[in-house]
Image 1 (cartoon, rainbow, N blue to C red):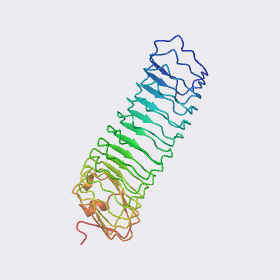
Image 2: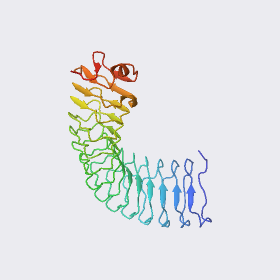
Image 3: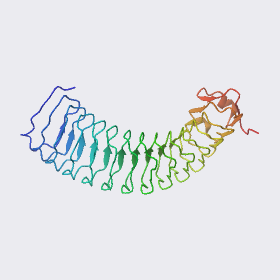
Image 4: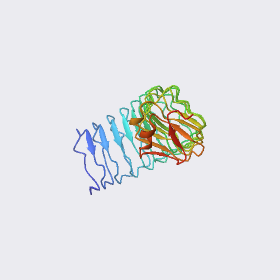
Length: 310
């Protein structure tokens, strides 16, 4: 950590970029730096920051500081804002119409209004205490992490460009991803879904859904799927015969009676974890000898491999 408790920038009126991250800086005056576009104060000892004169500012990082309030009403050109783990309790970005990336995880924010941020593509609002999140005015959103909140509803009907969704550890009882055809990653771990329809997500590469009370999972339309983690559910049957790109499968701790891994391309599956399915007598595979020789394929001892499981 750089030991610079203070710095005088008053003579640097043409300054466009300033990085003081990971330092002992306690105060910073940028009122005369009217052309400043990039400011990184992350992991400093700052308790406040006046940006009223910095109308050209595009990127701001104040994460891991002691700043508990920030006024961005004059920063209409702001494109990226990072304030992670700062004690900010209220964040007003209504004047920041160009905002594309917002990361505010681990702050004290309990409500987030994004209705004036139509350019938003990336949002990390995880580990807050949000009970409501309105994304209806953010049609360009591609990446969303809203894990560890209190969300009961997550409406994605206006987010057709979404590619990455992490919404773990919420209180969701329903998750409709039918209007997100570009979705490549979905992690909805530890919610109360009971059902999950991913038949309209043909580009899905990774699906993580343990602890969601699922009783069924239809994956025949997900031909690009490489990673499936669906452990600790109530699945009785799992057919992966159409998923020829699979690399990793974890379906442990379910109620499986039928598991079909016979997809014609078993040799690219690097790991199968299938423990705790006491009623599963047989697993369909491409080649019994080959499957039995794989040390990274785990199953209960009584369960057998077969090509037909008659």
